[in-house]
Image 1 (cartoon, rainbow, N blue to C red):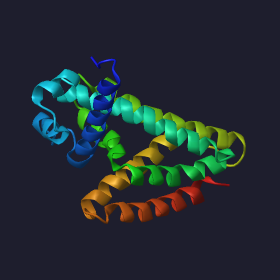
Image 2 (cartoon, rainbow, N blue to C red):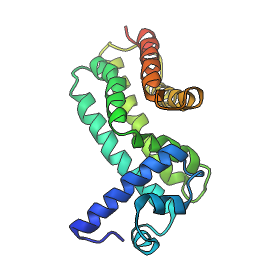
Image 3 (cartoon, rainbow, N blue to C red):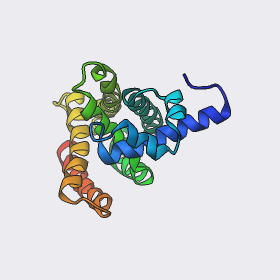
Length: 202
């Protein structure tokens, strides 16, 4: 249980941020509890006081990232104007935020790694479902306003778009690992956005 003190809350926030970075780099299965403890700089006892298991910490990271990142993206994208303008703002806003905090990619890696575990599968699907529904709502409104092509199910469109964005990042990490990966990914994301734009925008 998180202690209801300013110091306790700050320590918990630090652990979530640290774990997000480690999980983003190594994935859930590639990260041992000892790795997380070492990265935190805390003793085992102090660490267990906040998170007694890797699974519990990973789920907390997912919830934290979901609340913070979807909230920030939602705020910035919805301020863009029309549904079409919001649709076109999605990728640039995501790229800016991800460049500022690469640990946000832990959502994708953790969801994928933990989805196979029956104990955590239902919980880890929630963050991704939130992103999909957010995008689907924009597509739905764009179709209703006549800005986006109709005839395609908004939910299916959103799943394809979110999957393409996340999959492109994963493939870039494999093909171009290292310091230049983020820059290369941004360039390829622009290509993806151009393809999507030409296919969906009237």
